[in-house]
Image (cartoon, rainbow, N blue to C red):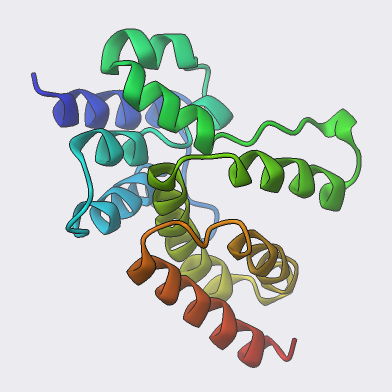
Length: 175
């Protein structure tokens, strides 16, 4: 089994084992990591490790799968990318704004590859949130506008798409 097949299996199984569904659509949660991976795979500079990390980017945050497991099964490069994509804040770190700032600083230290995957994640999530939850979108889009400040090194095409999505959402939400 090649790296991407393994990443798909682990990603799908990790989220399915907990019965995770997308909040607004009820579809299998793994649809989101697949969408992020497809966005990354379309880029001329993407690597198989980036696509694998995109497929697994929410596993550590949302399931019992550890970075050690990802490293053992998918390799150090994928595990390192997933670590850079994983939020590090905890509830005891304060309110949502304080936690998001901790996570933003973590992302600021990430590699160009991880920032590119994070841009794909932002693009995927923004579409769903803005379409289905206008109230939360007002908070989310402000957070993503701040996050974009530390993602400037990511893929320029995805960065431009993300900026446009945030700009459009701000206009539609009256921000």
